[in-house]
Length: 86
Image 1: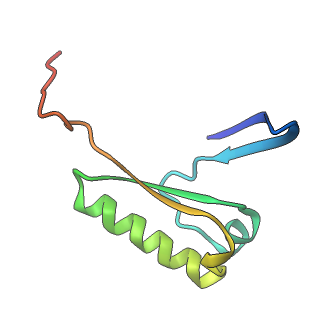
Image 2: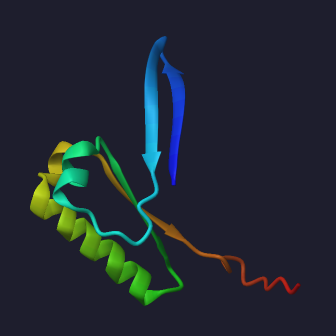
């Protein structure tokens, strides 16, 4: 998905463009386009963690990672040990 929002910070207007790339690994064009990257993975899936790390390594092949902000965000559904049944 793609999301666009104008935000104002300290009186300056910025256009925030967010692209959800899903399971597509970063390519050269994507790496050159982005100003920041957020990799999201599940703590409940070893595969998810490994994919996020692979995508990070792939980005580093195309762009100096030190040039852009990069965040790794972990999610966990059952964080409190509570199971909700339908």
